[in-house]
Length: 185
Figure 1 (cartoon, one colour):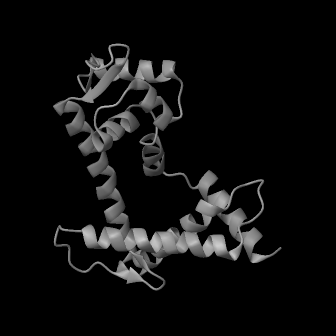
Figure 2: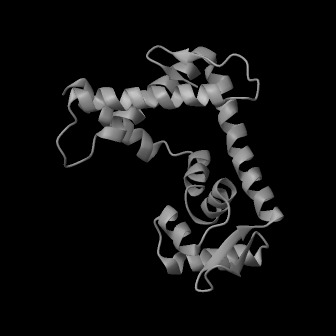
């Protein structure tokens, strides 16, 4: 068995058997109520159909989620004044606060994990994850594997995004590093 198969098997086992409580919470944040709150926080007012698209869920599922969030006082639904056939979903102050709290909770836990790993290993991990995700962006199951030109283009696009992000950073953050090959964070 080659290293690729061993690595795939180890990853599969870790993902299946090593699922921590935190991982289940992070995974839960990618669906359901936490996802809707985060989506509205990041992108502002949206239609239920746009939320259904983003969530990859049926309109009925989104309607049920919005009903539950509305009961909690986290969202409001209003008729679109420009097109009365459409409903607009907006985050309330309480909903925005909950979305930020959920995000900050997860961020705090991940920062703690990184502090346990140390800076060097965290930078290595982030760099390897960025590289892995770039390869995943061009490799699709059931399709031919990408040629070197497609791979090179994907890494070039990632480098451009990283440079743009770096130049847009106006928060005065010090000590941002970059990995060899342009993987900055």
